[in-house]
Image 1 (cartoon, rainbow, N blue to C red):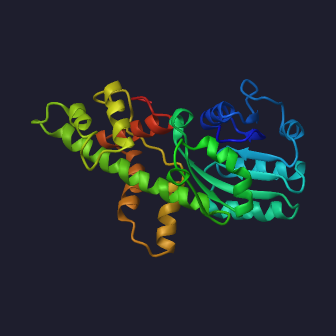
Image 2: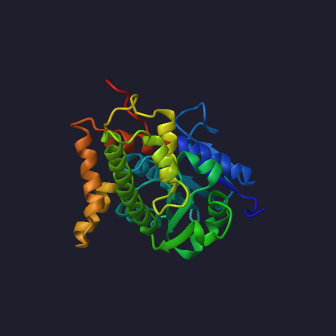
Image 3: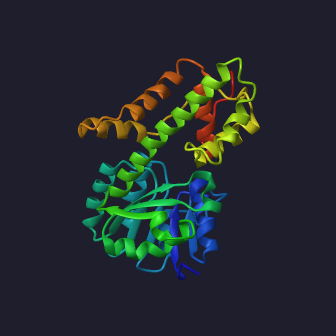
Length: 300
């Protein structure tokens, strides 16, 4: 067993939080979860969650970035004690991490951020993890991190990137790269689907899964999406963006780093809201495959 026995709190039992609770429990870590949805929550309130945990407490927050995360951290600041540790495992902007850490430090409550990648497949496959914070806090959370990541060499799926905010900064760039990769696959899909001499588009992508230089997990998910709906007839081409792509482009501008592929992929998502194209259908399908993100049915 990699993870020692411990008891933590988990705030937010959406798709990823629910699966993370299950994976942690499978690794013999006791987890008490709280969610606004009473059907999945183990306790009725954040106060009850805090009361249920042994001290010093470790709470993993897995709620949407922005106001939702700030509200949870602010409420926990009034409930926790000196020496307790909050881990933000959502997709917060790195600048928000720094604000939260400063606020909590006034009460001697510890804080660290962890960028998490793995989507709906993380329960089975494990999650890639990028941590930001003090080395002592990372070491304290390591049994949880080890339980969440895939089996094998720790460095292949976990990194302590740096100080508070660094984990989410790394995850932001990860997601920016993801935008570019998905857009490239999607544009290739549209080219193939438009050419009259191409008779088997799904088979072409399937043949790229082994031995080619473009093979990847995203390609595997693309093949799965086409197996479910070969012409993507049930999916509208509208593609959401969850924020990280925008932040990556903003950081590229601030640091004078050319990022044309990521920037173009972000703009393509904006364009998807004005026109319905095969490429945008594929990006939407890929987001659903790896992250469980909602797609828009045709005609909605």
